[in-house]
Image 1 (cartoon, rainbow, N blue to C red):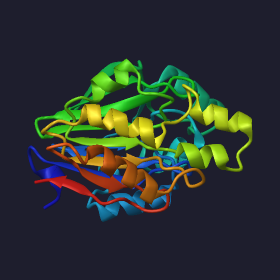
Image 2 (tube, one colour):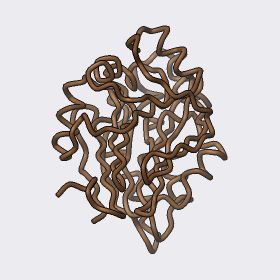
Image 3 (tube, rainbow, N blue to C red):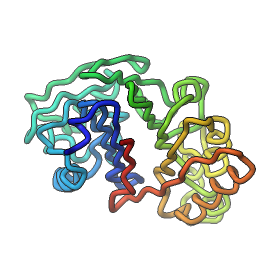
Length: 268
């Protein structure tokens, strides 16, 4: 029996995370939520089916922002399955401008700070700082627990920190290693953009935020949106592990990948 037939359970499956594609499934108390669709429709379908979730059973798609690695599969998936999209006005306009939406697409325009009820889950959004039109993070909250996602962060603003508190599962950015980025081949302007307050989050800043977000109920942390050019999974994982080593309670740290799903998290 799949998790969407059980009460007070959740299933979290990061199908892809990284600069070439992002897509996450959160299934909780009968509500099946897709966060971003930045990989091909085929890969989304394969990921959902491997999680024992049919694409037809998706209740909503929340889009965090309009960059290609978050929306490239949106048009085909929505055209095939006609699922309602929740996103901000700025993001919707930017996606539509880039022709990533089909003509019959149903969109619910939400503010950066919103609460949306789908079946037995509350899906809350909050403002993130990134070089996009009107970007958001997402928390899925129910009796089963709280699952939160925040990537593409120039820095961890107060809203992000407050909305991530008391999460049981976190999908959180650890994009770049400062030394690798500074010594790498990227042009200086691009390096400044990545390190800027509307860019991405370094391993160091990510770990410091995670330390502040640690509490007895935090069970799993996905280390997400790891750069292929300016980071390695090993460095990102080691940095987070070292940060938690003096903590009496340490969550399980899980790596994510741009080209394959991460380990699935179940609460059952």
